[in-house]
Structures are given as structure tokens and as C-alpha cells.
Image (cartoon, rainbow, N blue to C red; front, side, top):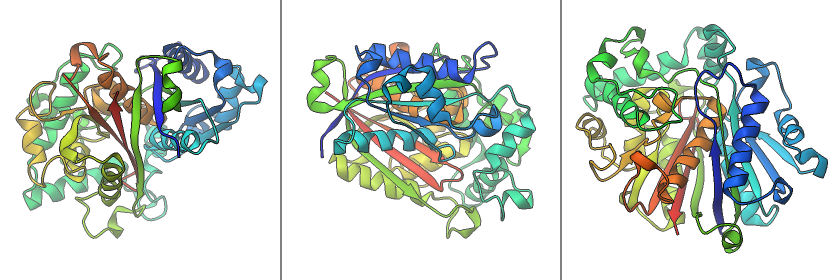
Length: 389
């Protein structure tokens, strides 16, 4: 198997992009990544697209063919594949591309993620998101994705492994970093009291505990590590990619306060990279709901159970403040959550951090970075580890 490098990244601004179409934002992100890699489109020989629900959001299926067509790659018969795994769609697309390059099936691959969501009403958007849980035994019974995460939050509070304030502080952390990111949907710090007093969504979670509805796209370019220097001196190594699964329905698990798929995927990723959790300097985690941030820090091995919330509340997860910086992009909560693009955007942020291109949110001397992408309530999880060269 060949070692793999990321040689280019690109992203649109995240937010309410009323004047842009799905295809235009996808092409914009891809062209930025190709330009960053010092390539031309003709040098790409594989295309993977992460997208959760364009069939519902914009009534467009066959996304792989659409992007291949409008990027000009269809004229060269470049194979394109659309990947769907709920909120982990972008993360899984990245993993498929890594395996394609590592195996030799492809040589230079573009991975994209895109979602156009704001043209739909809230009910339609939430119905699609709720379908990433068990449609028959959860969504079909009236449970929403927000209410499922609220159950996790209530259980954590009951067990004493997190307080309401600690859960809310995950959103505070993301907005602190989002204020430093010119591409974020929300570029404003939010105090803890604002999160705690925000309108109720599913007790104990309020509006500021939930990631927003967002348009946006992101892309990265991969090639064999041994060929990276032919294109650029500014690249990073993909040290590990691992994917884990769990039951689709939350009620089938022995402990709803642990995402077993994250635990399994992270252990495998650390082993592949030959490192420990303590070696990670910066991480992008899937904070679609604030409680997800606490779960992630525990399941990824950054903090013991019951200590992750305190780390957020004390500001230890901010740039320059502690042993690890979390969601320097602003995370899903502040940067925005275009579902299929989120996993790819995480990879792009970690790449910029390891290349020293994160500007005001730069983590000093970062050697290893990690990205965790989650589908549903942890039923699909990817963990990627990148290394500065």
C-alpha cells in the first residue's frame, strides 16, 4: 500500500448562499483545491463526492455525474462516486479516496463535499436529518435527532459526567474560534449565558446547542506521498484513516453516553499512525449538538469520562490555552453544517493547521491533527489523522 498526501485544499464560505447553486459551490471548492495543489483539472483521475440529501434538498440525484459534468471531468471520462453516510458523508468520501490512492487504483484524486440546504424550509431539513436515525423505530415514532442527543445529555447530567453549563460551553468554544475564521457562518463570540438562555429545542438543549442549517462546499486533493513534492512543497501526510459502525438506533446500545464507533475507529487510527491520543495538537470534532463535543473528547481518548466538560468550561480547548485545540474552524456549530461538506471541511482545516496557514487561529508547532466525522447518533464514524511533513 502506498502512503498518501494531501496537496491542496479549498472551500467556499459557509452560510446562507442565496445567490449560489449546488453545482456552483461544488465547482468553486474543487477549483480552489486544484489550484492550491498546483494542478490542472486534467491531472485528476478520480472524484469522490460526499453528499447526504441533494435528492431531498434540491431534487437532484446522481450528484456524482453532475459534478463530473460541470467540472469538465466528464469529457475525460474521469470516474466519479457519490458517498452517503449521513453526517459522516464527507468523512467516508475522504476515506474512500485515501484507499483508492493507497491501493494504486487512482493516482491523483479530488475529494469534495457539498450541500445546499437553506432553500428548504426547516421542517423539510429536519425531516431529512432525522432520517439519519432509525426511520422505523425512532424517527417513525416521533423522535428527532435533537431529542436523541437531548436524551444523551440528560443521561450525562444524571450520571454526573457533565453539567448543563459544561455541555453549553462546547458551543462557546466553537464560537470563540468561529469569530477568527473569515469563512465561518457565524463570526461572533457567544457567552455561556446566551447558550443557557437560548430558546428550547429538546430539553436540556436549546437553539445555541444546535448546529445551523448551512450551504457550503469543501474539497481536498490527494496523491501518493512520494509524488507530492512534484506538485508542492506545502503538503501533509495522511497517517491514518479508520471507520467504525454502531447500531442505527440509540436504544439498542448498552451505554448511550459512549459512541462505540468513535472509540473503535480512534483506537485503530492511533495504531495505524503509531501515536497516542496525547500526540494530537489540534482536532476537528463533530459538534452538531453541543453534547457531541463532550462525547468526542472522551471517546477519542483526549480526556477521561467526566473531565471533558470541565476542559471546555475552563477554556482549555481554545487555541494556545491547553494541551489540545478543538474545532479551530468554529466547528459545525459556528463555521456551519452543510452536512455532506462538513467532513471534508474538517480535513481542510487540519491540513491548513499543519501547514501553518490558519492565520489568527493557528496552533503553534502542530505535528499531528485529527478529524472525527459522525453520522446519525454515532452509527457511522470516521477518524482521520494527518501529520505535518
